[in-house]
Image (cartoon, rainbow, N blue to C red):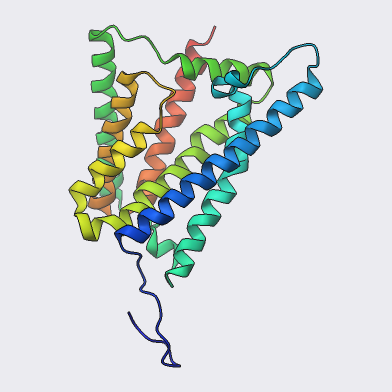
Length: 248
């Protein structure tokens, strides 16, 4: 621990593993509370706009309009909480989270790795006769019915990847990797990240875990979280386009 010009002790420029986990849990709570508030606001709006159509709480988890509003509400709170944690570590936000422009070589490797995972997952999906994820199509259809597809694309393809990558491959990886090592940190964070996607069937949770491993490896290889944000955005945008192409 260093000292400032007055001789007072200052915090290190990086949180250790336990404080990092503490901040991570706090960020998760902020995410849950803010997304719940956004979903609740949608439910209240629905009751006002559609008084003759009762809205069930259990429908929120697959309602694209509700999820879109939840992500719109939660993003500034989540990013603000992470920014607070970085500030209290006396660190630069962009440097702490590795928000640096990736090299062209790393972008090429990242695109190839993402394409490889998607192709392998697609072949496995056909071989195992796995049905397409109903969650994606239900959310797309409900958002379309409310005229919120542009906002849903913003939320799913940009805001969700931004939140998740800043937290997992940015903040948590930064605090855990020096203590646990890159491989263990990547595996642990990929497992937690995949487990959060409980709305999907086990096959697609496994695919998300594989994507987490790839994103973590690319974060280590390139030293850039911005690269994983871009690839995560590309992956979610492709999923949205697939839902659009296959929607009735």
